[in-house]
Image (cartoon, rainbow, N blue to C red; front, side, top):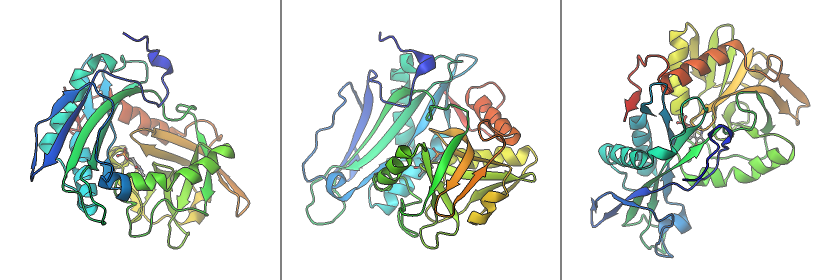
Length: 338
Ligand SMILES: *Cc1c(COP(=O)(O)O)cnc(C)c1O
């Protein structure tokens, strides 16, 4: 097999053995089938291509200290895909179908699950697309649900070192009452220009403000944002933020560690008051934010030494990782052992 350097994996695509697929046709889901074909054939008028009728998810499988493979909160991903499908008028896979597909593809590609201790994991990408032909703007009458996997390392090159981010007031990734709170590709297409501007200026991620008033913190790139101050974990509430399963888990862990948790509008002026800041998501896990640049206001906010994670951030990270890799007990029932 390929010589994968597990300890130095980036966040990219590496070919694995197989992926799984099912079609919804004539009012029902067909069988889940496994294939080694990395391509999809579809009608040129498929709704996913023209009208963005698509939903995706992202989760990971972790090879634990005990050698067992764990999925983290897979039911939550199934439910979120169903919510995304509801808004975009697609037919979602049932929760059972979703979970079965994930288990099937992970088991079939177990040789690609990175060994324990390398810091890497197996990224799982469920995808739902309208494949039926429509030229008028209408929902498709046919859907493809598929899941592929690929081994990944850290999302940011800095690993668990702090990233610096810049505030982008010139672009929004989603509208106030649009698709920001569901996981559709369109939000990502809308963020590419902004992300590239950030990259060109040397920032691995940009911080968005709420799209209606530009007064409150929204998302940090494709991850949720949090700040910590005086024993309080504070994370923005907004109709244009994607409810992160990682953030939801961190909020629970934070509470149980004795932090107070507040999910509410976060005024931009609060950036000056946080002791620690970070971003979180399946891909980013917890990425500490060391500096936030606000070029329009000519301000830079620095958290801690600007490079390393603060004490609470580190503790939250270690607990979350510990549960995912089976190093510490999972009191919440978040983990599915394969
Ligand atoms: C997927 C995603 C997240 C992170 O969600 P998790 O469930 O923690 O992986 C955050 N923001 C956006 C915009 C996303 O698409």
